[in-house]
Length: 253
Image (cartoon, rainbow, N blue to C red):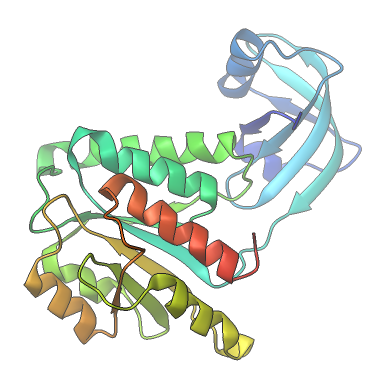
């Protein structure tokens, strides 16, 4: 069984052979919920790539101490995988970003598309963004990640096209597209590794689909409409399917 993983900014200060003290934010959950005690091994991550492994020497609901036995730093590798997730009703957008995090997404962009039924009104935007951020962190810990996805600000409608760069490969998952994503990714992976894009971006529309104006804006910036297969996937699962194909094509899986 893999070691339990907890998040603390103090992971960045860890050194092999030293003692690392963790506060109530970690100790409370570790002791009360996970029933972790002295003698057990755990990992502490900072969400930015640092992982400190250690053995618990003292544990209470208020404080925990570990003897650090190893410290590693995970570099951010390219291309970075980005999910543009349209807001969706019934928490399907939350399901999407949770699974995407477990698969290995690097960046998440919430998108209030023209046909999105759900929305983040101004008075709720900060609270909704925090909800997404907390879910990304929880899913990262579940997946034993040391580097958590970056959550970008909400974008609206056709302005999404302005958030992608010239060095990005952008794929719009669209039910009418003729080009298969698997073929497009295979071509990308078969090219010169030095010419790989900085980011591979997957755009997932809302329940009502991507509008013509939004699609035109994206293709005008070089985005490629692609399909996943013969069936139509929900907004909650399309992005994850695309990410799995990308991880496989890049040789990471």
